[in-house]
Image (tube, rainbow, N blue to C red; front, side):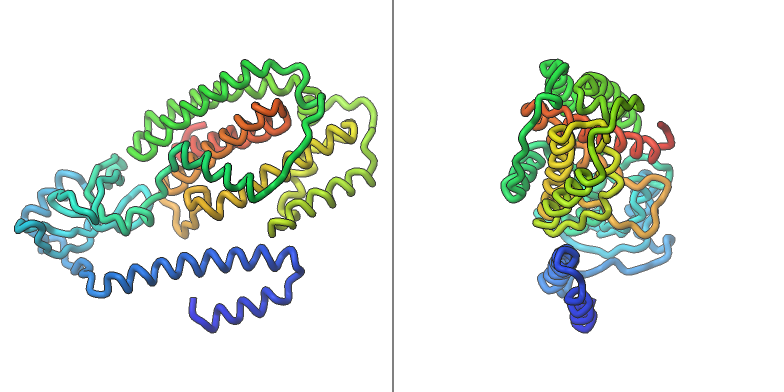
Length: 371
């Protein structure tokens, strides 16, 4: 992106309505922020030596042996010296993301390298010594649960959205059982994040299935709350909400999101899905404000934590570990939100966040060709 493109984009943004303008400005801000980081790296390392691209037969014997042993596809190399010993910086392809990454052969622990897992030509995980500057581009490491809690807490403070939980969103639910199941689910999700970092495919599938079974029990329990039951059953008794009330709720929903530069239109289907016309106004208001709260907190959290932003990948290989890592980060975030809603005894918030986790689990299992 050059200066002319930025000016052109700013002119286009000026013509947009206020609520849309803020959203587009935030997108431009993050694009420029990423560009600045990239340029800073280039300025810091102007003479950094990149691998020379040579035919495979020209690789040194040690490198050839290493590549044969690990079954990695290499495109080039360059020589370097660390503490008086000869090493090679080899550029190899991570089959799990489609990205090229520089690795150090043989391994050497330095301030610029770290041990990471990539995927070889056979689809198997291989540990390599990679350069830190490229690890972020290689894949997104799922954040630790402490990071997720901190990011969510900061987003909640910025969102400043408080909702009153009506009796209909608390009644008939065994909240001790729900809390116990959510604690177990969060523990399983933390193990899942570690398994993803190590690319343990079979362990990941097992943990995802275990997580799904635990959360299905939570769904069964919170469905007993009247407000959730009405949105998940086809039995309709009498119409209580009028078109006028629903439009007023939609307007309030859009206003809440607009205060934080979020366009409400993409969430119209979601809004209609959770509103049932046989709800009373208090139930409907709880559903709408709870939904707005979750969306605002997640959008604000994405601005702070890169791992929560869905990666843009032009060409997705058979299984892309960037998408898997992002999905696990989302699972951790949604589970943390669900636990907070359980503390408030808000069945609406628990149900919606757990349902989001179950959808994400199905998506990840499809990545692995199972569901």
